[in-house]
Image (cartoon, rainbow, N blue to C red; front, top):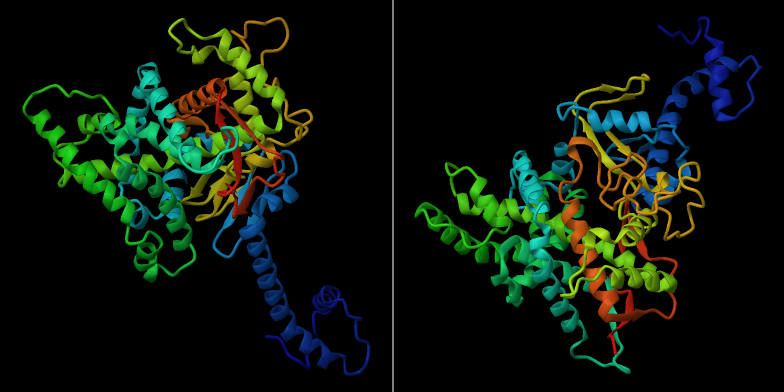
Length: 503
């Protein structure tokens, strides 16, 4: 036991004095000063650590992307500690591939979704263990995207026409909020894919379908800031009593019940939209089956609107900022237009390169490939992630790393085009949907986004229609296109451009 009168470990005190930046005492009362230091030093260390965590947590909350840029060193793991968790960020190819191959029982994506979105409150209590069903359906839909091209193109035209109807205009030009437009266009298009043609003209359904992803995002953030005991009431307030989800559920359940009755009678389903695929595959022994099917579709609805709308937002800003891009993309579209007016989307290799470059410079998230360690996890090189911590990839710094991308801060339309003698692009073509550890926006491995082909398809259809039949411009594209919250980069909701139909 430590004794004030007994011998002391002076090296311990030397370290304390150095830490506290005071001179080492040499008087005959040194033992008193030693005792004070022995008592106070651990307390000061704890207080300093507490305030350091608070400062870092505050910086993460409002300047997360900048914090990651500041900490990032090519290939070197680093950590960010907040008041709620510890992030381990990895950027070497070896670490990234280990994360992507890790078993769900060790590094879990589902646990991340449950912690971030708290689906029991925000997503109607969806069963995340049935996400495999959604993957199967999305793979099936991805093989038949051509069947959706004409009806979705018509719906995109309808929504763009609505954006130009009413309100003041100058020579046909109207001021339009960019992010609101992209959300509405994607919502109407997705409604056809998910629920069939009947709901694409239902104004109240479309309004609720547009509001639902916003409610989920806001409610999830609110729940991360309140005690668990208040999660239910807080979510109810954030979503205005779950107004959007209740409206969608009330509209969808009767339609699903009719289809289930049709299925039970042996009749063949008239439509093969997403909800019909869910009906075909969802176990018929589950209680309240129609309601559970609605939950499954709404869970995917959030991602199906959120990400394509953001991608389109930044793509339109890039076209406004670089007018030469528009001319080159339009030339490629005209060169691949069929006699009936349709487009060979798969042949638009310049559009693929444009989307990859736009997304590289304008990621909607600073980190990706999130996994929660359900138990302590050790990488092959000995790097350790504790149970409950998150392992992630700092995707925004990676995709702006000069050791990976030449002139990383420069927009290069041709960056991802085939190089060398392979002019056809058959061997080296880079598609927007490709998976790559150094371009991880879609995730990697078994957990890669299964909806990326559909998201790319919708994005391309909208851009082709807008480039072909509309003019849009901005007097000056603002340098600040987003505001940040934690690691997210959120589009400015009131940012406008001028839009008109081609004369």
